[in-house]
Length: 180
Image 1 (cartoon, rainbow, N blue to C red):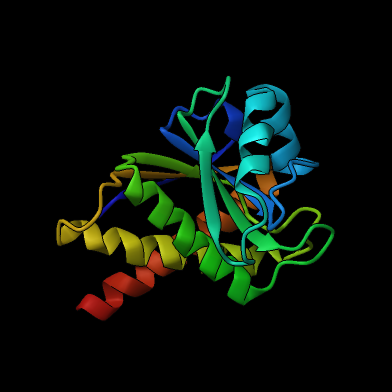
Image 2 (cartoon, rainbow, N blue to C red):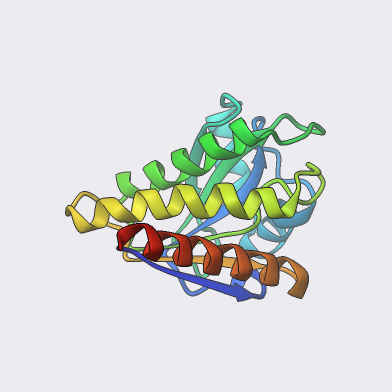
């Protein structure tokens, strides 16, 4: 199974092959995670996004990483520009982000808490959904069907990191109990 790590920090500094951007479906890099990616990654990322154009909500697109440490940025479109994230869109955009990573044979990827900033999605619910989707995808690694070896959740503040850590601990405990 792919190793799952949960850390607090700046996703633009993550030492991984790909980072995930909490994106809108127009792929406009505005504020929050997207703004940090735009500032640190340089204009080439937004230029690539403009060439791709709008994508369906729940989809994900991949661009180069510009000046970032990461080689790629995967844009998880969980909302419309100025809109809200839903559970269904978060699940789909997380799953599609993992698919884009697989297409490039990425071994390490970093996710933020997609949709919890300006899109207003509940952090606890976000942790439950994203960790479940990543865990299910990681199980594919056991069957040799995934390139991903390491998934890092890079969370901006202590409160969000603690919510993800507690959610992951509870999920891991429940999984171990069900295996008995």
